[in-house]
Image 1 (cartoon, rainbow, N blue to C red):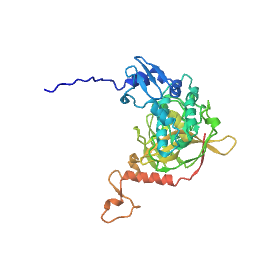
Image 2: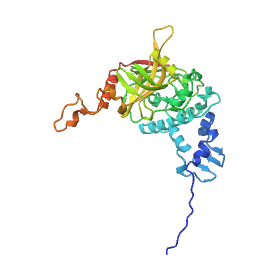
Image 3: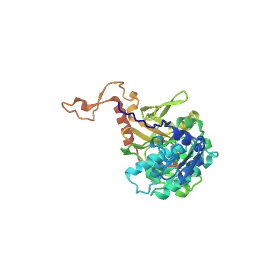
Image 4: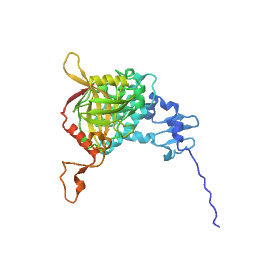
Length: 373
């Protein structure tokens, strides 16, 4: 009988680091967020044990040499490496930076500040440190290299309902996520297939840069406007909206079509009376990303500027079937020539007809200068 060999096995809760460190009460405070990133060494006095972080390792009393990688979903150093990279900006590392920044914004906006007006300055040190190492410019939560993508930020539906706009108004321009309170999500951008808008002019960094305690300034875009004709409701929930005869059904999952407007139902109904339009920003293989705006006449002049009042994601595969007039089956696409022996070549699913209609709307947009305040 072969000799049995014994070995020591540890059974560890894979949420150990999160429970002791990431989800501790102190980490929910807004000012602590940037202090943790900017400090070279961090010592955590947790409920059950002491932990420490430095430029090389994250460790616990239970694991004094190093926390096993499986317990760290994203280490502090991984985040710092992506945010504070000194490499020249390329397409690859820009994507990594953008994803890490998006996650950083999401985590920061989940924290709590005693005074909401500290929202910019409690984040400014982190932004300034990153800006000093990267060949990029910071504008009130958005970066020049990714501005058109980050402009499509949204606020979670719960926070949009629970956090009144009046409490944060005046802290930052409407195009910045600093202008609202609550948890912010930035779109997880795939490789864009088409851009519908471009940035023409950004504000002075003295007004919206990393040193600003409150942000101000406008952004000038070149793009087109898609007016929203009507909005339908299911009790207090927006259920669908109409753009030039194209009905778009609002969904609830992360990938669904969703018109994310700021404010309560009553506030949105008031906005609808003033007029709401979409500015398409860019499109991927699955989605079109837009921002929602309302026009404001500048006092003493005839010029119109726009205030950002939300964002919109349109998911091609879930466009409302009523746009076709055909509820099921396949229809011919007259724009595709018939190919003998390949009868499916000129057939198109009815949902795709909506995509064509949407494409027609965006390609016929009159490009104009649009100033966001």
